[in-house]
Length: 247
Length: 362
Image (cartoon, rainbow over all chains, first blue to last red):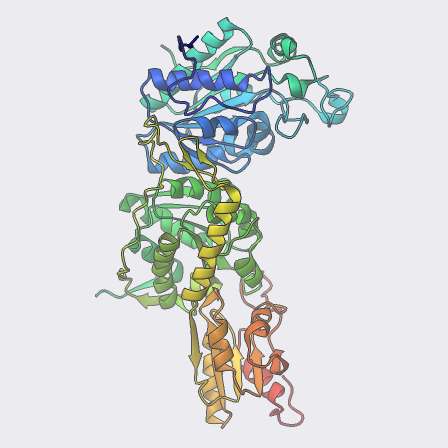
């Protein structure tokens, strides 16, 4: 009996849907949200990615891509956008890349009002190295470098990067979504679309944080990832637009 | 032809513009600051962008992004600032991105930093060390060409004297051969075509256009640096044909060395000088030839002994090599100190040759 392809779930902007992400990882869903918006808006962007599990998604994408030093994608994107002011520019970083190693670069890019869209895939853990504490690891979360859970007395508190960026004058749009439910995915897709539309309008720096699941790095069963994200991360950081121009 | 009186930093900025530089980023640090100021003043009028970055790390990473679009780009700093940039310089090299790095150094103690670097991986940087402002103007333009030709970061090793000396100069564009089109540059135009491009030091490529991967890519890059090593070494040998004594130095120190060579020649000393113009690739064969049969090879550098390592690797007879320079910094920490002085140099040469009159000191 021959099989027939009835439907393909691979976005057009992926050259291959092969990947080495763990079961239950939210990154592939988050990346799909981004690619769908790029396709909807018919954009031909340059993508800059940092170092993390999501880097392989950059490789699979059919987007002109620059892999950046850990934490420095916003600086490199500044160079790209300043030389190509009419080209859409998107950066993709994880929480370790952007908030731990690269806080300086993201804050200054926002303050300068750089006209690119910065995306943060935030799962609160260094997944690629095997589950270590980042600047967004929530209080109580167990990692290999906070074995008994993040203790403010020992490890300090997680940084709310969205809240920080929302205070910066040069930031035009700051939002936080998640990919732990169908409704949340649809809502996040609208945020990414708004950010890219505002970039095209030259509104200033645009930022979308996407909370994604990392059951491997959280040491929870795969099926509990979405629920853990809700309980641990959404409770800590919240969901919604933190800053948006009227309209 | 219009000769204008200008500071070395302004002349170098004019040369960068003449070479087609369209992006510059930097963080203020003496004596590099005036180059940043001049680029900030001149680049916008030439259709370019100059960024006062928030750190040297940010500056070099901005440069990586701008270079990836195919524009002619530059950044710079000195000493500690360049130390912060080393990771980015290695990234430029291993991504094969052309960029010019202006090192307006605080003296000569950063020879190792310029020639060995502190980044990761198998890479080198072509490093030119001009002796004065006119040569810095020429080298600046040559460096933009070499960067594009070999797709590599390159370094100008200047200093306080070059950055801050005011000279009369007419900066004219220099013609170089055409370089290959930058079909690797990213502009988004290949996105969605099935043939999107990717720049990454791991050189994995995309599923539709696989790259050679890290080993394959880094072997090709190593071969490229071997080729540069054979093709791009530059030097100047002055009065070395019949010399018994060869003084070796680099950069602005060489101006003082050559003047002392002339004085000692008048005293009948058969002395000449040799200077590497490219600190890397080091002109080893030329040094070997210039020092063949010499009784003395004296290295005058304003540091604890860095260039002398390269001299030891290449001089015809290692047993005749001596360092006669030394640590030399002025109290501000910005300039070459007391040893940038022809009298001291002359005494040190005479001492080394046993020509100092009894009772005299150096």
